[in-house]
Length: 216
Image (cartoon, rainbow, N blue to C red; front, side):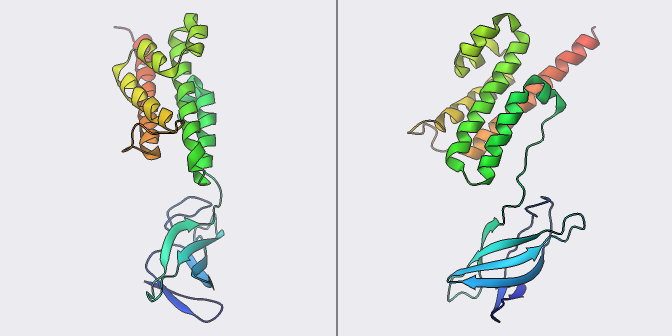
């Protein structure tokens, strides 16, 4: 445990501390400065030990008397918001997908959990339609106007992409509806399915490129 003091002279033992800097986003063991108590809350001022960062931030704890150990909430100062890194190939296929996904990701980091799912669903639609249009440019207008599920069913030929994209669309639709159909699934599952969709689209596209460049 790590012992801290407050400006009022109180002492607490912390069983858990943040393991990631909210500014540089690197794994760290923060340096502790001082704590401040307010009612049943403890705010611990600390800073990042990374020489390239060194930013000061706050870790938030809950006091639970008579327990002498504050409970870490898992939250810190928001710091800088992250964006997700996508490959050059995915950016080429759908720059709109990358832009929309990052906006949804930023909303999620700000605890806007009720709206970020809708953003991820929109990002998926742009990714799938932009990908399909690359292979069916002559039907561009039709694809743009067709519902996502039908595009996946009728225009996506790769079974791996079709399988994961279909399920991502199901969960994405749940984020827009009053009643959820897939009660056992959540936002993390949606993001995993989008990641898988991105992966298989990238693999399929790269494979096609090499087959064209190196014909048998």
